[in-house]
Length: 380
Image (cartoon, rainbow, N blue to C red; front, side, top):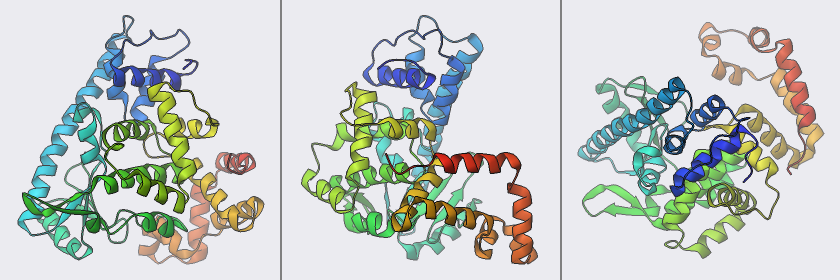
């Protein structure tokens, strides 16, 4: 892989860390500061540090120290999250609440060491009937609790920690998603069985965990973009599970629910960046999206992908017109949801729209939106 941009060098450092090989010294035109910033945005700067410390020509003392601190922070975060995980699973079990886990808490275990795979939060899946009891238990422990989505709880034990309690693998998050994602895999407790040493802990079947992990990454990629941490996940998931799962069943789901194209793109990127295998398909837009996404995606990708989905019903031009109309004239429910203070004060639809326009419609933003809309084309 040629190193031309700062993104390229970050990917190179990750490749070398994964394979434990000596990295290339930083090219003169590459900025260590930019590489570090990109690594933090993707939550992989700690992994890149494993390569940086092998370099003969390291970053400045100040930046190297900051990078090292970020690495140690990932170790500390892992330790803190492990304590919280043990406390919570013990609490759920003691209160006879069945639970299962997915995403990071399992994915961490297939990395060489768990602390290098950073988690933004800890995710549990529970029965919807258990949410009220869980909320009560969390409040009794002094945690802040928010209902950000229906049938979900977001819990904040402290300023640096978040725990999410879900009741499904995939809730509907955009038009048509229920049929594709929830249709492809859901009913979490049907996808596993009780652990031998804990009847309230359900362990997912390998095939279902692998399938769920793939679809979770594809979901982020399709919605607002997924970053480099997800690409690393693909590498380690494939390495740990590919030979253990029912590949025929997974292939049938990918084809039935129209995931095949993005599945192929993401694994082609994984092979190119992490295994140094040249792609046989055009990955330009997919690579740009991943590199721009950071860890949680960005609004421009979210809007572009939404426009493309809407275009399937009546063309891209119509989708753009409708989206401008929705942006300029949002319904009252949307305004109240985005601005709870408007709802508390009982503002009218007209007043809400005027206030929102004053806050959001700066000349710079209007120019950006117009330029962005002009660049959006059909999927490449």
